[in-house]
Length: 365
Image (tube, rainbow, N blue to C red; front, top):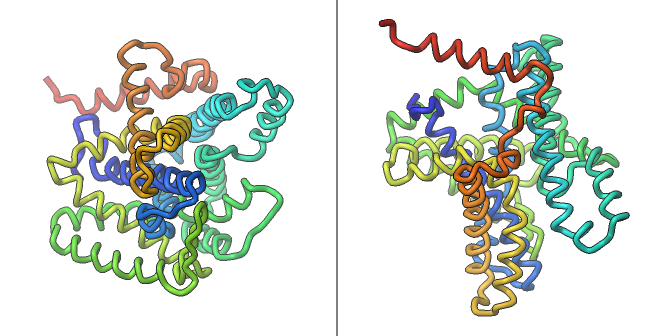
């Protein structure tokens, strides 16, 4: 496996880069459509990605779970549960402040939204909330020694079943846990496939193009629905069929990431993927601001072009903020969990593990 100097795997980061671009694209495009009352070319790009956009993000998040799942509960919880809950809580408050609440003087509404966000994932931050829940569920299943095949079957049945409860968190768990667990359980297969693609790029490209044609036919088949702020895939949305297209689409993104990571001029994609959490946490506010400004100015009226510009701004703005934080040293808590936000003693144990690993790989003198 090709690795960067920081021991990160280039194609995994490239896959994260593609994933965050797809997520921001969807929110930017549907937001522009709703605000302008127009459907642009970006709506159709978003539609093509509908079956696999979020499944890919969850699958990638589960790829390295095997490296930590056997650790004692405190260390595991600190890394895979508390870590995400810290960023969820922080950015839920920040987003609520900017979306209204305190800025408009609606203290009661702000308080109610804040309390609701504790038990129900807030806005686009539901992904971070669910990662904490998925991490907890995976650890419990590991503790119970549940076989991978049994968990995958159960999770697949949950995804296929029409689960509709009063809890949005439970509904999202039923919808997406199978992809997170598949990333964990099937990680060796995913790595082998991508390594084979990198070794045989023409074969990998042919397979990717064949998948793209099939996915396109499945999405734009009878049943396809295009609305300003809502899109439904056609045949690819059917129960069971959707699961299959989600998994194959997630693997196709990994294949594309593998191919792109070998191209020198695409190194920026892996760079972006290594900072995908920064973009995910902070893209909503610049996205909304850019959309508002561009529509008010009125220079650009095409919904597709507007969507693309909003998407680019929503990706770049968090990266600029992060760069400013790294340069000045101010506001590190926004994207780096401070020492106080770790479980007692966990940070010291993490640091000791990292030091031991570094010592193990150092050449003997």
